[in-house]
Image (spheres, rainbow, N blue to C red):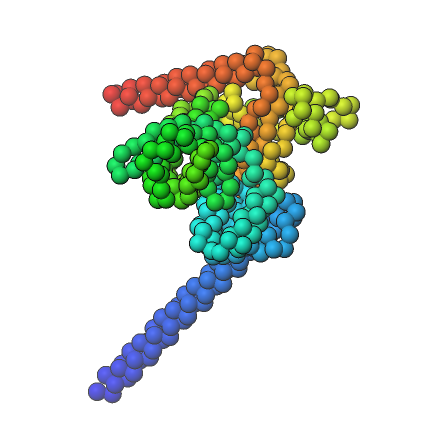
Amino acid sequence: MGAKLEGFQVGAGNVIYFIYGLAGIFALVIIYLIFLLIKNTIVKQNKIRKEWKKFSKVCEQKRLNATEIDFLKGLVKKYKIPRPVFIVRHLSVFNRYIFREVGLYRGAETRSRENFTSFVSSLRKKLGFADFRFLEELSSTREIPVGVITKTTVTIANVQKNFESKVNTVDEEGVVLTVPDHIMNEEPIREHHPVEINFTLENDAEYIFNSAVYKVIPGPPGYICIEHSRNFSRLQKRKYDRIDAEVPFKYFFLDPDQTHDFIERNKFALTKDINYETNVLKNISAGGMYFNNDKDLEISTLIAITLKFSENEDELKNIVGRVERIVDNDDDSYRIYIKFVKILEANRNKVIHFVFEKKNALKKEKLMKLKKKTKAVAE
């Protein structure tokens, strides 16, 4: 009986040791989880600080004042924009949230609304979002160029009134369209009537925006004011095919004098002290290209480009591009989108030929792989 008691005591001790072991393992797991939580928090905080540092850098480059910076910071926090730099870098992000803020001021008293409109207009210019003539595609009615002719349809009591308009003004309030006198003299157009505006830009992209009237200005001449809208359809195939390709090129950015000459006369003088930089483009079409760059650039910066597709071919020179869009990469570099604003037609045709040949080669490569795979399955 004593032997049994002794055996019992030893067994109980083993259980206690086992429990202590489990508790130790559990404690280690908890410590490890706490470590991971702290590490992830530190990494997240560092990433947030890094993003805000990029935001501050762009604000400094754009020479924004404290009021403008605080306003943009408020938008980032209010709408929980994941990457603050996007609101000062990308037109579509800026417009999306500014559009919401303008809506809040629509019903405000006149002085506040006018002050806010003026403030936003100045901010847009500083950020380089004021001139939309060179954008490849639009994202809202805010970017419609003044002077564009539209086919306008106003729906009144389920009856559609179709007429041709001219965009007279585009501001923070909306789009102001001309209305022919005979349309204004017929059944009156009133606030909240649905409107569809259809127009084509220079790049042959057809846009159809859906909105509503928020104000009517009797004539003659008569005008209707259309609320800003992001509700649209876009009808277009790309004017030029593009292809991913790594092609070395050299370039330099035009200085202020060269930029002024190019804008005025579509040409500029080359100087002896020009220092060419080299890079590799990642994608190209006859209308433009993009490449990655460590330097942060300004939208609308002009760049002179020289490239060639192979050692046996002549260089394509005298290409002038404009920085259209910039995307922040994850590795602290920037994807720079360039639109060709001056290129000899012979050089453009060479680019078209290169893209065509490259696409054909890729198709043949895929076809060969498919044949080999089919043959392997059959065997």
